Length: 221
Image 1: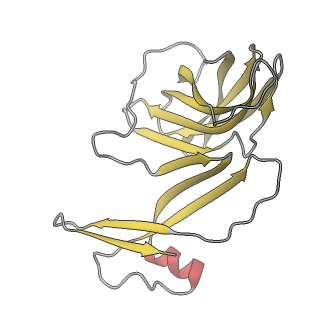
Image 2: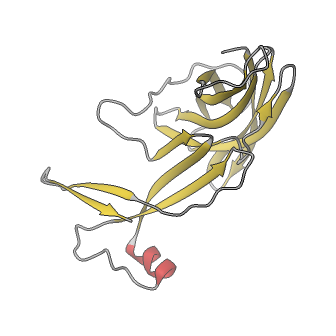
């Protein structure tokens, strides 16, 4: 996509903690004349039962590399699955920093480079595996990423049981009834710019949907 060539490989690592683990290696090569920067990633992992897990986040392993013409960037990571076979696919989001004529774009130019599906098997051979689907039809994934002016924010949410909330904070102030739940937000902010930035304010907009279908909203700052 946009002269960014992506090579992807997966390797089975073994069984650990009751889960099957794979390592995957990604290589980007800029075969064009533009200079680009990697901003964010989006992976979709599917096990053999069709269970789908989405992962979105800034950069690759926390890095937001700038890739000039003819240069490459490589990284490795891993993923667990409950089954011995599965698949993965995804995409990477880039921003053009310098055009082919050497000039800087007047407005941000963003594009997505897709990674085709990879089979995840214990013998590292091709296999028929479920395709899986990204969250759609009103469903929202537990992970999100957004980039503005090369500042990238990634968030992953997870249900926080009351006993874990007590361990973390010494209290569970948000649990007032058996129907209440607390969620832990894992937030990562990456600065892809050359200058230092400071976070001066945090603002959350929360929307709650009850078991009876009722909705309520709250502003947190």
